[in-house]
Image (cartoon, rainbow, N blue to C red; front, side, top):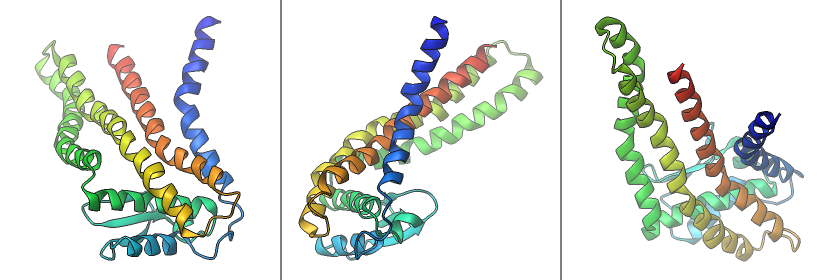
Length: 227
């Protein structure tokens, strides 16, 4: 019974943040036509106001994000075309990352360098995970478990590290940049700022949820390895 309660508690800790993020974004996606501008139009306006006319605003199917390499703010279609509080708030958050890039914000630069550095390690880790069972069968080497362990840590552990390092960047984009821009924009109604803060908190905590899920993946992989 105690084990079941502990398992449920851990499940809530891991899954809870992701569910809360989705609930917040969905809640403030209504009403759909709350503002006269779409998320894409607001992003374009904010970028231009900060001298970032070279930064593109694009619709994407891979989730809201700013790409510092391509200099592009990318919004999911429901935010790109949407006129809800979620749409304009998430758009402002991604513009916040573009401003960080322009200003040479150190944590963003560190994250960008880290992502570039770990990609080869992730590919190596994935290769080790795929190759180790076949190498083990052919060579019968007892230490294949160590090879598999190394592969798992390289491929899964590096993702967790990136998600955790991302957190300061996300909170800065949300509360030091996006929220002041929204309050100055004149689009928010008097009752909106507390709700916008909740959305911005959710946008930042997306990476907490991703980090927790990465840890779960590592734990699952380790449990399978030990069988």
